[in-house]
Image (cartoon, rainbow, N blue to C red):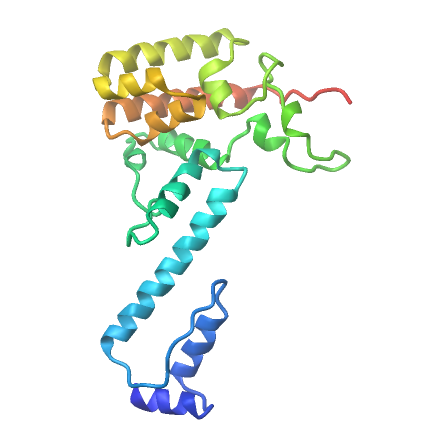
Length: 231
């Protein structure tokens, strides 16, 4: 390592020069001190700094993305605890343990807006069709409100199958969920908060039930054509 640092300080090629250049070219440039001898601790510190930098990039991207409203609060939790060594967003989430693969994938699609709801698909510019303004991405079932995650899961009354699935799901949740979760659901200030409470809880039965519910709701919308307002 000493020889590599000496070569780097003299502008000669070495693995330390490569490391210095690579770190400086990162999205968030990192500089390293080559004016003194290095120890193994310095290497560990560089690894930590790089890890924190890329986690910060991920959190900044997700926290500002209009495609991930259900993940925004994780970035804000991170920013409120900037000195924490553990990333909230990068932490393993209990819903990833949902045993049915199709249900687990449905939850991930819900969180990342990788679904076929109008709020997402009408965001895209298509051939001869510009993106549709957010307030015009109406529900294909009720054609009244914006077809987003909270609307289809919690509020839409334009489809009997939706209402039946919703009633069945919440009847089960209020039977099996811990009292603290029930109280939080009843006092939630928005549909987005309700979804967060359901998807981030530690109760396996509630998570599995919610995953199944999301899967069936999204499948209904996959079978129906997207509603487009006439311009």
